[in-house]
Structures are given as C-alpha cells and as structure tokens.
Length: 194
Image 1 (tube, rainbow, N blue to C red):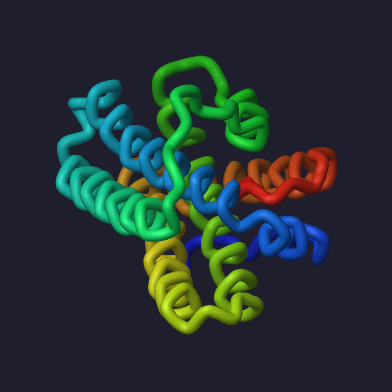
Image 2: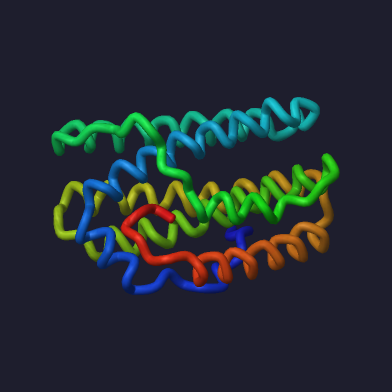
C-alpha cells in the first residue's frame, strides 16, 4: 500500500539530460547521497532513542542505504573514478531541512516526512534514469534502487503514523510536499541526484 503522497512537481526533462551528459559526476554524488541517507536514519535513532517502536525499522533503512552506498562505490571503482575529499553540499536537502519546525515532536514529525519526500524524489529520479540509460547493468541496478527508494518513502510515513494521527501526518506531508515542489522548481538543473 502506498502511504507517501505523489510528488507535486515532476523532475524537469533537462535533469536526465544533465545526468547522462556527465554520468561520472552523478555516480559520485549518488554514492554520497546513499551514505548521507544511512547517516540520516542513524541520526534519528540518536536524537530520538525514546521512539523505540521504530528503531528496528531505522536500523534496516540505515543498513539498506549503506548497502546501496557499497554497490554504487563498486560502480565508481569499476569506472576508474574516485570519491572526492570534500562532499558537495546538497542544496535541495539543505532547503528541505529549513522546513523543520522547532519543538521536539514537531521536529521529529518533520524529519520523518522530509525523509519520505526525499526518498520519493529519489525513486522518481531512479525510474527516469533506468528508463533512459542504455547500459544493461546500470538499467537493472537503477530499476532495483527505484523499488527500494519507493518503499522507503512509504516506511517513513508509516513510522509517523505510529505516533501521530492520519490528519496531522497527511496535512503536514502535503505542506512539505508542496514546499519540496517549489524547491525543485527554484534550484538550477544539474546532473546530480538532487
């Protein structure tokens, strides 16, 4: 069952063109995003250890994202690329995190729902990528990632629903979703994950 909301804005067609024009840069950024996604799940455990009901799910997400990082890192090595010493700031995530409200419970809800929206955007972009990339191995890889990211988008909403009513969760998710659409529209097109 799909719990996440559909994205308000689709990625612009120019995005996939930029990715395919500089796939090595995308691949390196993708690896960094997977690493940060794993760290995000672990940070929720560290910040909210009292939310014991969801800690096993967060551990699973952190492990899956770390496995994705490993898989992308293998592709980077196969292509003779190298991870940079400095990680490029992700303006998209930075803007989304500005939506987090103050107050422990509001902040917790917002972080879960922002996680859902980021995963939904990742799923959308992996789908676009596997539909447009020619290399069979990469097509299969990104198809598998698409399914995983879509699932994570649902898991974050499911976690939120364990602590808040549907009305509260979906009202706030809609607000974040709309803001995410405006953020995507405002950022320049690049060949990166976000």
